[in-house]
Amino acid sequence: MVDTQKVKIGLVNVDDDDIKSIYYDTYYGSLAETLFVEFEPVSKDKIWEDFFPEWIDEDHKWGIPRCPEIPMPRLEDYVGLDVMVARVPCGGGGEEGKKKGIRDVWRLQVNLVVANLAVANGWVQNPAAEYTERTMYVVFMGSCGAMQEIFRCDDLLTHVGDYWVYKPELRKLKQKVLMPVGSCQIAPPYAEKGQEIWKQILSKQTSRLSHITFQRVAYVTVLHSSEAYVCGAIALAQSIIQTKSTKELVLLHDSSITAKSLQGLRAAGWKTRLIEPIRSPSARKGSYNEWNYSKLRIWQLIDYDKVIFIDADVIVLKNLDKFFLYPQLSASANDKVLFNSGIMVVEPSMCTFEDLMSKTTKLASYNGGDQGFLNEGFTWWHRLPSKLNHLKVFQRKGDPNHEIPEDLYAIHLLGWKPWMCYRDYDCNWDMVVRHIFASDSAHRRWWQIYDAMPKKLQKFCGLTRQMDERMRKWRSIAKKEGLPDGHWKIKATDPRRHHLIS
Image 1 (spheres, rainbow, N blue to C red):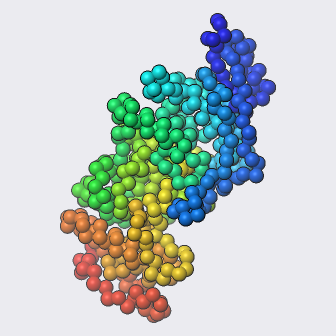
Image 2 (tube, rainbow, N blue to C red; image 1 turned 180 degrees about the vertical axis):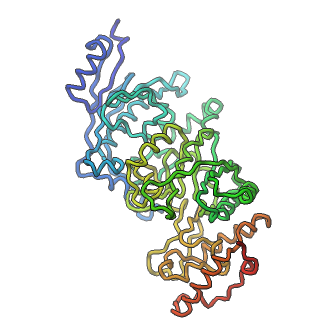
């Protein structure tokens, strides 16, 4: 066999023992040519929080936010590679670290180096100036394997011991390497670097890539444990439809949702699917988050290429369809290095679902629910604008009325929900501990969605006797305490008060 027929292997972060193993497995080099990939290690003073900051200047008042540098090799020096082999660091952390997802900058760099080299060698331009995929193989050595956020389990060919062999789908991998290296920047549909390349691809190969740009997508929500959020899910569906979106709406539900409620949900626009709920392993019996892991079922929707999950206590104000272009996992920031799972871009996959299920008893959730768990399962994520998932929470002083901005994509209605209050005002004002969730302007936006609903759907948003009794109780307490916001002085005129439901 002549040299030109040899398999060309690029080596990333390997040592002498790794080299001997590679040569042994390829008949002492008779079938392979190896090439060390040189790159500068990321600075040791950089920590994960530098790449996933709690806050960034989304409005560019002080310039465009920048991410710290993660050095990459000179890609032009490594042309013609067929296989990438890398030893992946696993981040250490001991027994306590095993309860958390790996947040290791060096591990991230190794994965991104391999991903960039695989794309550079596999995504090639032919003489007709069209981009085509050339088969690439990637081998990771190490107990933890590749970062599943970058190298999908769907592309895993085999896993034996500490060896993980991938045949990556380069179109999807290309999108990942064009993303910012962390949530230190708002992620555009395709990263600023390389955007022109994508425009060329789409313009020259529109017919060939139509299955890419017009994937089957859907908005998804989940109801479980009780019917308390049926009205919220109906309002969510109606709010999406009112933005002129024509995407499919899919609602996953367990057996706690009655046939009557399902009829209303379907009339609102949802395609309903029955699921078995998944219990949160660390939640207390009867707690609000006991069955929150049911949200993992969205990864089983494999008849869709991509979905945008939205919690049932959200209303959509502007069309979100363009966010289907974003890769998994894209979400808005929540706290420190964490994202909010109330709105997420997800790529359904059975192997991802099975992987997540296998980790439910291994990874700890900081809040006992799905959000804490998913943040350990997806430590590398892409930041969407906070306006996409605006949390109705007011912790800063200087805004006594708690007005919400006008240019929001969606409002995440924390605290008591609008349909659980009188329509006259946000009943979170009646309890001092819930004042941070009170906003009459947000409350009004929800009721605008309600007023635009068909009358047959509004009946699913009635007041229960328990809701009415709770509000009477806390209005009375607010009056006795003379709360300065004065909402307790407002005369409740909500007509639902005269037609309480059981």
